[in-house]
Image 1 (cartoon, rainbow, N blue to C red):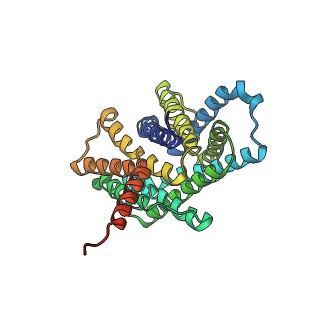
Image 2: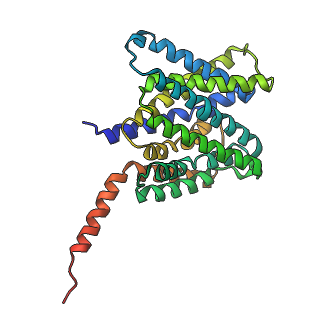
Image 3: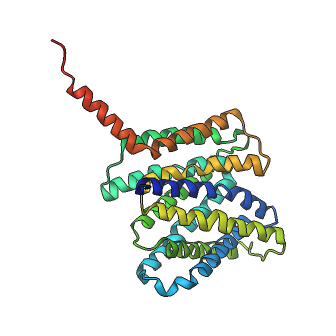
Length: 306
């Protein structure tokens, strides 16, 4: 029988795997003459519509309170949606590679918020895993397309902070994953629609190819990974779920090579290995801690020779 910890870890890893398709579908949709803001609006509109269709037979069985649903909606509106928008803005200034590296400091932010706000103890192995993952993320950056810009760096940090807040609020909000995913997508859709109208980039796509890519990013790279990540939070803590979710850029690199024909440098391949190593350390953190405790116990019992 699969343990709760293993089940939650598998959900988080699969979530990162599906998120990896966001680059392929997103880039393909934007190449169809859509702004990033407009693309995001249609992404979350499709996600919300698909979820609503799936949930229609279950509407009468929903027991979640209106308060919990409102909190989930506001979480999507104020945290997830804003985080997504800021990430794309940061990418405009400093490139998606560096923006991605800075964004994925959110596991560290989660650890700090949980420590200072809730007094939760953080396993030491998580700090080491975070450091290894961060080094790997740096190696994934294409140095030829980096533009060091303080505004872009600041936007990426704020984006990471908002995403960390989204995870913490989602973890503490007692609501079913299906309903939570729907409300989060509706909140994100609202944020992106407002921004798209304000920057005059709102248009209705006319190409079938663009709609196919929007459907892909809306379902495969949004509904399913968000749903799986929220399910993972039912079984494992937010720190572990967030660390495992950093496998997303690894899958982005892999899919970029096979689907977009991108070339991976040697240091990028080493970065992938480091990220995987950090994720494995997180995945087996309990076993590592047990082995370390046994080792300490054995050395502690050993008496000095006379």
